[in-house]
Length: 279
Length: 279
Image 1: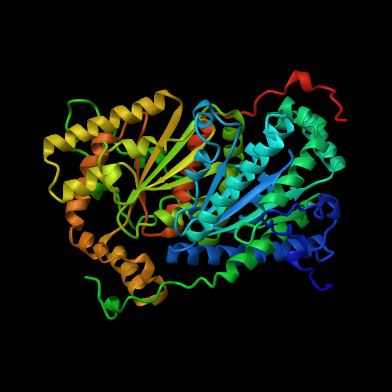
Image 2 (image 1 turned 45 degrees about the vertical axis):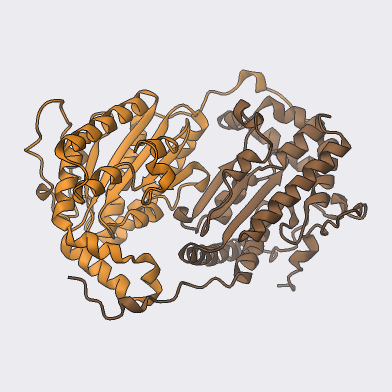
C-alpha cells in the first residue's frame, strides 16, 4: 500500500476576509481519483469497517463526556452519494448517538424566517454527532443558480454563514464539511440507472433533470460558496466521489482524524461509587 | 426448533372504557423466560441479523411510500436495556431512516406546557420510523411513584394518552409499545456491574439507586399504566428481558410482524420516466 496522501490536500483553502480566492478551482480535483483507496476493493471495505468500529467508540466517548458537539455537513449534486455515505460510513456506529437531519426545499414557515433559523434549530447538542444531509448551503446555491441572489447578496449570505459557524465552533462544535464531487458523466449514469429501474423511481424527481441542465452554474456556485466559507473553524473538503468505495473511505478517514484530534476520554470514575454494593 | 409462541400472548389486554383491569398482572410474565429463543445463542443472533435486514428493507419501503408513520415506544426500569435494544435491533437498518428520541427529565420550558407537548413535537412524520427511548409514560410513572398524582389525576392522564395515541393512529401512525421486563435480581447485577467498572460510571446516576428502592411502587405503577393504555391502536407488549439476546429477538420479531402487516410497497413506477434518456 502506497503512502496515504494528506487529507489537507483536499481541503479548500481558508477564506481570508477581503481577498478573493481566484486560485481555488474545483477542476483541481479529479472526481474519478481514488487517492485514499488501497487499490483493492476488499481491503478498502475491510478498512472502512475497521474505521466504523473506531468511530463507534469515539462517538460513545463524545456522548459520555457530553462536552463537545460534532457536526458533519454533506453537500453535493443529485446522486453524488449523500445518502449512501451516511449508510456506509455509519453502519457500525450506534444509532443512539447519531442524528441525521435532512434539509429539503424550505417550507412556508421556514421561508418566513431568516435562512439560518431552521438550521440553528438542529445544531448538535453537547455529546451529539449530527449529520446535515444538505444544509444551509442549499439556501446559498439554489437561489444563486436561479438568479435570485446577486453578488452582493451572495457575499452577505456567506458572511452570515461564517459568523454563524464561528459561533457554533466557539460554543464547542467541531464542524467538518464535505462536498461530494462527482463528474457530469457519472451523474448521467446514476440518473439513468434510477430511470431504468422502476423500483427506484421514487428517488427520482423531474427537477433533478432541470438541475442537471444547470450543471455548470451549480459547479460555479459551489466553487464560490466553498471558497467563501472554508475556514479554520469549519473547513470544506472536496471528496472525489465517482467511486463510492473511495468516497466512503475518505470521509471515514476524515472523521476518524477529526474525532481523534479531540482526544475524547471517558469521564473520570466517580469516587463516591467506590465499593458501593447494590441491595 | 419448537413452534414459536404467539406474540399476542405477551400483549397487555386492551383497555375497555369503564372496566377495571384487575385480571392483568406483570407477575404473569417471567422476566427470565426466553419464549422466542431458538435455544441456541448463535442461532438467535443469526435470526436477529436476518430480521435486521428485513427491517431495513421494510423501512426503505416505508420511507419510499411516505404515507405511514411508525412509532416504537420503549419503556422499562433502569438497566432494562432500552439503549441496548436500539443498538442491536436496528444495527442493519439504514440510519437515514431512523429517528431516536430520548426523553429525559423535563426541562423548565417543557414543564411549562402540558405533558404531551414535548412528545407531540417528535411524533413521526410520513415515512419515518421513530423510536421513543422513554416517553410520555415517564410523566405518568414518575409522578405516580413520587405521590404527585392521585388516582383521579392518574386516570385523567391515561385518558389523555389514549386520546392522543388514537389521534396519531387515525393520522396514519402505527404504534407499538414495549415494556422491557427485568427482574429485581437482574437489575441488581446490572447496576453492580456499572459500579464495578469505572469506565461505566458515566452511565450511572445516584438517582438510579433511589428508584431501585421504589421497585415495588414502580412495578405497580407500570401495571396500572399498561392496563389503562393498551389499546387496539397502541398496544403494549411485555418483553421478558433478563436475557438480552431474547429481548432483542422478541422485539425484532414484533416489529417485523407489525411492518409486514402494513403491506408496504414501493410507489408505482412513473410512466413519464419510461424511455427517458439522460443527456
